[in-house]
Image (cartoon, rainbow, N blue to C red):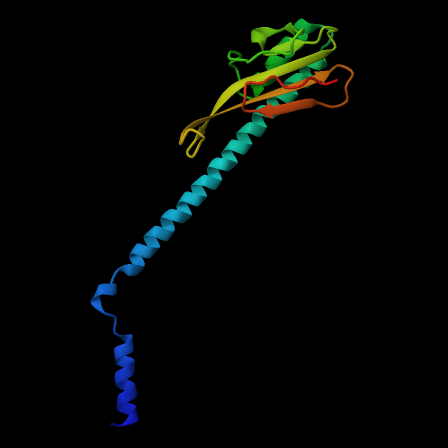
Length: 171
């Protein structure tokens, strides 16, 4: 047997694929594409959740700052805080979990004022954020935020949480 004919036959046999392997790449590609799309959807969902939570906290911060600028007039401070929150698209002031003890309640228990009338506390009630992979397995994620600032303070004291606990108050 001549080397040339042996090598040619080997190349022909190596290039031939048995029938049972046809379509395997399609199955592998489908599985890989499904996994990749799942991770992309999860990344988008997590990004939306972070952006929404940031927007809600920004609304609380802005409302507390606007309200503090109107102190010691608590009526004007409350309306100013509500007006600022409405600019963030939040108009529902029901469902607030409470306020710091000893403080004077404003509208819907979502805005409160310290006993000396020099600090405003704002709670943004739980907001439902649409979620594909949310904590409930896909539906809505609840986010709420708090902010507190005094008329003489230079910065905000705030917390953001997903629980119904009342945060600490600025000292």
